Amino acid sequence: MKIKFAKPARPKTGTLVLLVAEGGGLGPLGQDVDTATQGALSRAMKLAGFDGKRDKFLDLLAPGGVSLDRVVLAGVGKPEDLTAYALELVGGAIAGTLKSGKSKDATIGVDFDGGPLSSPQVAALIASGARLRAYSFDKYKTKKKDDDKPNPKTLTVMSSDAEAAKAGFEPLQAIAEGVHMARDLVNEPPNVLHPEAYAKRVDSLKELGVKVEVLDEKEMRALGMGALVAVGEGSVRESRMVVMTWNGGKKNDQPLAIVGKGVTFDSGGVSLKPGAGMQDMKGDMAGSACVVGLMHALASRKARANVVGVIGLVENMPDGSAFRPGDILKSMSGQTIEVQNTDAEGRLVLADALWYTQDRFKPKFMVDLATLTGAILVALGKDHAGLFSNNDELSERLAAAGTVTGEKVWRLPLGPEYDKIIDSDVADMKNVGGRYAGSITAAQFLQRFVNGVPWAHLDIAGTGMDGNKTAISQHFGVGWGVRLLNRMIETHYEG
Ligand code: BES
Ligand code: ZN
Ligand code: ZN
Image: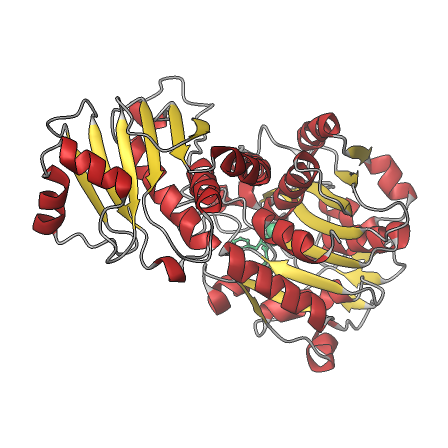
């Protein structure tokens, strides 16, 4: 789908979508079409009781008096209640309804005044929502159905200041591309996207000016990453760590660090998972996908910040050479870990990734994202990610950014009472804390590897893969977190 911007004018072909405010009636464009159709629009509005409430649509096919295929009225609610995210959802819902139609071209008109957002801003956000929605993952289907094709081919969003709308859309387009990249990575099957292939794919970020370094298993062993490397021992694929650096900020600005869990398939290892639903564990790298998508977004919109992204890529498989329950591992930090369950592997990967990141980059803060625990689904379901942090300011900034982008987070506690649960009799700690407070004890484990650096952990097991369907996200891979972290960086760290 190609997105363009133009000055308001009644299009001759395709579908026309008009954004109508609650109680505001038709704007100038709508009235023009109403006149040309001899009042068909206003009659239909009356008959359907359409009053512009948010998420209400009115659909007119082949209206007489005009050569348009279709006119859709899309309710946006009261202009004063409109937020950026609400408009993106409207844009997404419009893209959804256009996809099911047959028009090759569609035009969206912002046909109301008022509210806190300017007309070009509204146009850019509508376009952003449509772009986020217009995603498909059909590369492995040899026979494409109509359903799989992008439709319409061209979407034109009209605004009184089309140039400003276009300029406003540019960074949003960069972010949407980052989200799509993250979704692609999560949706890829685990036979294709194993750690080595994944690292190669991240290499493409170099084209955008991101520095990409790949550490192989030998290098990681030499650095002492005994926790991360152990997880990959059962796999025929070698593990990798990828370090992405974007230096868009001032030369001496301390970098911000984002770290991701990238388990390309989590079978559980020797502590094998039950078979039902195991295929979803291809998505156990959603945290790392968010980091890659974020770096893509930041570089394409040339963010004025220094950001480093670190992802630990491993495949967790059962095998004669796999690590086992009972093993004691030595992490890069020097701390030892008793393995009690090989399915609690994500924290082992992050232990070394976090330690390495703070040790090498001395970042202002670290945020990690991980599909870490099933327990976070029990606690929060799929509507919020779990947030754990040793820093109130960072937590508040993440929570505020999530409210704006619709990627909501909910903070859960940390504390010494939880921390002692993971003490081990035979090593410095064990990798499971038992049945209670499973997401918290996992976070306590991570905290032992941040070396006092301001840090936040986002447990995205419920949101990053197979999440709730929304108007802008309809697939297994959500791309969760790209917009959230982009927003937080843009708001607080691009001064
Ligand atoms: N990757 C899983 C967590 C997960 C569960 C992600 C469901 C997405 C959906 C993680 O590696 C895991 O298996 N965690 C165990 C930890 C337990 C053994 C302490 C869990 O949550 O059961
Ligand atoms: Zn696991
Ligand atoms: Zn896992």
